[in-house]
Every structure is written in C-alpha cells, then in structure tokens.
Length: 244
Image (cartoon, rainbow, N blue to C red; front, side, top):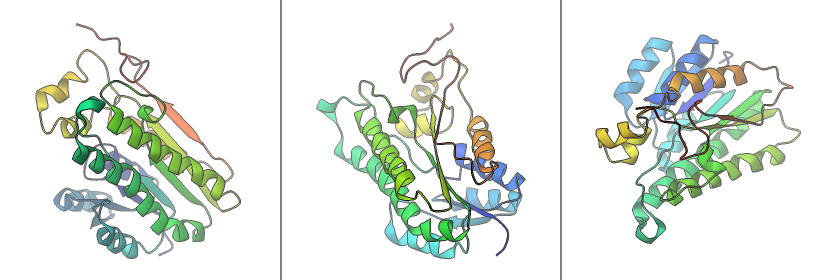
C-alpha cells in the first residue's frame, strides 16, 4: 500500500471519529479501531477507510488489529477515558484498573506494536491525546489524573528514545471537550454528564480533530511537542466561568 495511512483508536465516537474524518480529508487511508464495530463500519464506509475491531486492553485484539495494518504513517492514540469521581479514601480499584489498562497500557500496546511500521514509513507521527489532567490534579480525580500523567510520561519518554529516527511525537492535552467522556465516567448518567458542561461553551470533538489535522500536515522537520487546548471558559482542570 503506497497511500499514506493513519490509525485512529477509539474511533467510534467523539474525538476519534472526528479525527478519522479529518485525516481522510487529507488523503490518508484511515484504519479506525474501537469495540463498537457497527459504528466503525458506517464511518469507514463514509470516509473510504478500514474498520477493525479493537479492544486496547486485550493483547490478542491489539495483535490482530496491528497485524492487519499494512503500513502506518500516523498513529493517533485516542482510546481512553475516566470512570468515577471518588476520593482516594473511597477509590474503586476496578475503576482504577480500567483507567490504567485503557489509557496507559492501551497506548503502550498500540505504540509498541506499530513503531516498526512508523519508522519504516520514513516520516512517522505519533499523536497521543492525554488531557490537562496530565499536568494538574483535582480533588476526587486521582484515578484519572494518575493514569493521564503516566500516559503522558510514556509518550514524552519516547521523544528522547526515538531521537534520530524519522518519527515525530505530539501530545495534545485538551481541557473540557463535550463528547461521551462524561457519560462514560458517570456510568451512563446523562444528567450528571450534562452538568459538567452546563454554563460554559466547551470544546467539541472537531476542535481537537482540526488540531490533529494541522499537526499531521506539518513538514517532516517540524515537531509540535505538546499542545494544551482549553475552552475560553476554563482556566485549570476544575475552574470554569459558568453563566446562568
């Protein structure tokens, strides 16, 4: 396959779905991976990409997915998420395990498996979507913030380890983006999820996708190391200017 190829994880909704569309517009053949295959297949048909089932917490799933990717020029590590909002004293260890498996080990599995293909492309790019939670902490968020800090350290360490190789690395650290993120965090409680964004103008998935598209369109000698992006209504992780 001579067409430049991108891999986007967590592509069945939100930032992943928007990113797949954006990269397809740039001419990439996009491999979209997630657990919800029905959504993926519809997206792949629309953008001329390839839909493959992917559970980043499962070794066999990751192996089957990455083996099916013939070439990889861009990897967007987007799969991840949060569960719960409990203080350390009431931490749910299953929630912590899920967050670390998904955000940290999931990123590690995909990146490790696709590194040889990224290097072989001659101009590889790894984009990892972390969070402002990777550079700050907030009450009741230790499970998510610790996972995002670890995911960010993994990505940032690669910057030095791959120095001299034809691979660029960009970390994108979004603030409040209105997607299914909060719905997952609160176990499907739509009212509680909506309250996170009430009274502010949050970012939307397309905002992040366009930034990823910009990063991917830079020439090979340009490496955008990290990009922190928040809504105008947000200062720190839990500090917002809310109206009404």
